[in-house]
Length: 115
Image (cartoon, rainbow, N blue to C red):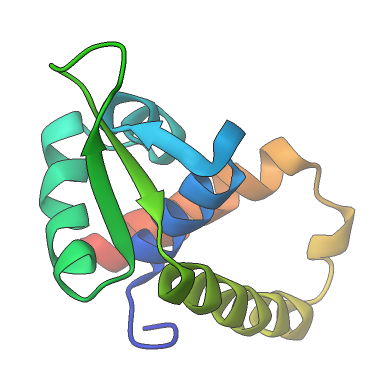
């Protein structure tokens, strides 16, 4: 747990924050974090109820909904960034990883945590 959220939830919030315009469809989030769109829906629901994420219908396509971080969600992910950064620093040697390698490492951690 990182700041009261799982590592998978952290990855989803961070992916949402880093997505262009800080808004993403469930399909986009699924691709970013390695889940199915229905898995993203299940994961977003409690975060939405806690006030970290909002969803709204896409202005161009009513079949799609866009997820965005709330101010509380932004604060949470920024705080969690610090915790994750500290954990990475303690492991040492991860600074040499490329962005792609770091993403793969995070996916492995996420897979271990959900298994």
